[in-house]
Length: 196
Image (tube, rainbow, N blue to C red):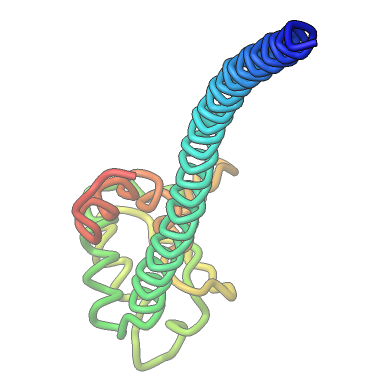
């Protein structure tokens, strides 16, 4: 019986050893599988982090670009408002010329022109006896030429010269519009020291 017990013990011991080896192998295989899964998850996480970083950078650049455009538009609007005020103030100063300044302006603009068959349209505010505009204007035309035909209308300032039915508009509003178009870039450079 001793040998049966020894044999049984040997079988049990061998079974336990085999079971232990199987358990160790299963644990080792599980560890390997788990390590592979961990590496796969880490790789997936790294990829997702990289994708998130790329998307975040794209989002950051898009938001920055949108804000730059928004700031540029606000700056342009502010500059446009300042320009409007500058040209409006210039127009107001021109509209408020006193009679001496107005006569000086007419002298500079009309002295060298042949006005013999022209009609000069002037603002009504200068049609006063004390201004003596007819004598002044005929002095510009010259003594040996026909008197200048003068008409007074509700102009804000400046004058209109009619030649053969064609109007030459020298009103201050027309001047400001032309000057503004010609000088807008220069005025922006002076006011802001930069190009837009």
